[in-house]
Amino acid sequence: MKKYYQTLSTNQKNEIKKIYQKEYANADIKTRLNHLNFYIIASYLFALLLIILGLTNKKELIMDISLALVLIIAGTSFLIGKHIIKTNLLNKIALKGAVMK
Image (spheres, rainbow, N blue to C red):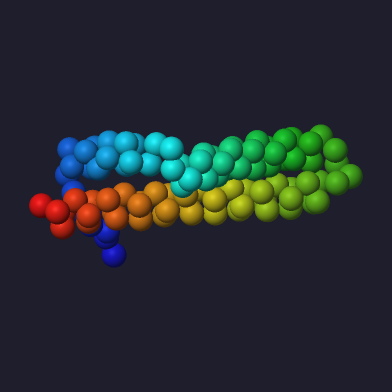
C-alpha cells in the first residue's frame, strides 16, 4: 500500500523535505536517525572486518562468518527501520499540508 507521500510529484516531495529539514533540524528524532546511521555503517564495517579475518584465520572461519552475517542482518534491519521511520514522518508532514490546503 502506497503512502500519500509516495504519490506526490518530485517538486512536492522536495518541498516536503524542505519543511522536514526546517521543522526537525534540532529535534530528537533527527539525532536518533543520525545515531542509526552510525550503527549501520559500524555494523557493515565490522562485518567486513570479520569476513576478512575469517578468511585469513582458518581456525575460526565458521564463527567469524556467522558473526558477520548477524551484523549484516542487524545493519540491514536498522537501514530498513530508518527508511520506514523517515517515510512515515514525511507522510505525516505531507498529510498535514494536504489538510491545511
